[in-house]
Image (cartoon, rainbow, N blue to C red; front, side, top):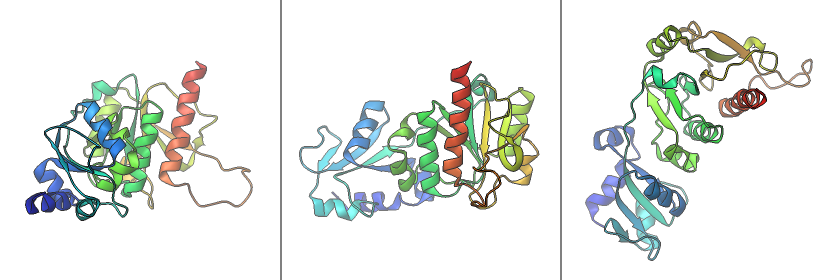
Amino acid sequence: MTKAEIQLVRSLADKRARDEQGLFVAEGEKLIAEIRASGWRIRKIFALEGLFEGETVETLSRKELERVSLLKTPSKAVAIVEIPRHTLHIEQLKGQLALVLDEVQNPGNLGTIIRIADWFGLTDIVCSPDSADCFNPKVVQATMGAILRVRVHYTPLEPFLEAAAKAGIPRYGTFLEGENIYDSELSAEGLIIMGNEGRGISAAVEQRISHKLFIPPYPADCPTSESLNVAMATGIVCAEFRRRLLKQ
């Protein structure tokens, strides 16, 4: 492994470098095997002897892998992967459910939300430009391979939601003053909008939401936490939408 390769891998911890190079880092034998099977292009794999074979594979010792790993606990394999490019058109979201993230900035939350989307069959997530980068190493690891099946897009949300409204796509968001989700009418298609960890959904995005939902605590009249973690709330909302669809 050359010094330049070490510097490249280490630099990809930074979003600017990932954008400039069009590359990201994936770690772990299972995840890299999934990436290989998916058809995504891998530039180079650095791994312990016997894990992978091929022209792009270079065998390293455990000590050498520790030098390039971006994780606290180094894995047995590190790969440099080309970032895929996804297109986003409003029409492709008609007839299905998709997630919209308004400034979700914690990498762990984003990674978990991508896994949730994958579990419930949502193939697209639309993020505001200031949301966490889905190819941040922490996000990639947290998705547990779901990043290969869920397309993550970044675009200003206000014009996107206006276009969705013109296309007749429902826009759902969670609010403390919203209607109880378990009593609400939910459609089989629409955008499920989740807000920032501390501030929730921004005022500009709120203006473009057609249905306000509330996840009620239990029991309703007892003191409880101020709010739910955004990833946990996303899981609850997605589960209820899918439950309704199964009942139809």
